[in-house]
Image (cartoon, rainbow, N blue to C red; front, side):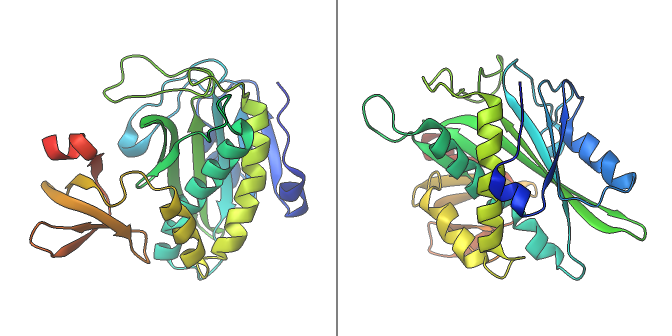
Length: 266
């Protein structure tokens, strides 16, 4: 497999490091930063044997799937709350890349890709993509963020506690290198809109236009309590805003989210 950057990413100063096999692209990206790599650098692999998801959960590998991480140097003085909104930049970029890769189906209908707060992408309601942000501050070097993107291109792992799917299962003839190239170009577009957080309003609008569960029932397990109500929006900091039954609004920073019938059963 041949992985290359989109010309727009090359022009913007991004570089690429390609591996046949890695334990984790994000671990490798951070190791490169510790060794003096300035970034921005995409690390991509044809096989990932030790991928991880949110809260230390594993990310199972299926041959032919997509695994890549971006090493992104945080500009000096950029506030942590702005850095945190990079997850929405990633979601918008991934969703755009997927639409460009898949196009309309044989029936002429566009695929139903949806962005699930805070950092998943769904296809027909099932998990297709996981996005993981990690940040590390290096003495004398400043802070670096890794943006890991795992996509079920060829297959979805078995035995998961939630519905999962793949592009192949849904009938889309896409390969990991082709999707990666489109992703690197879409990232440049979305990052320019974001503009170090100054343009988050534009990213927020794009994210909400593809949001899963918007204006429907939601339950969020957060901080040892369950918050249930209607998923109203995300706010200017990317927090999930839930309208409770009595009309009050609660902004959730992190948690396990369930929509629709799963929300009402939670």
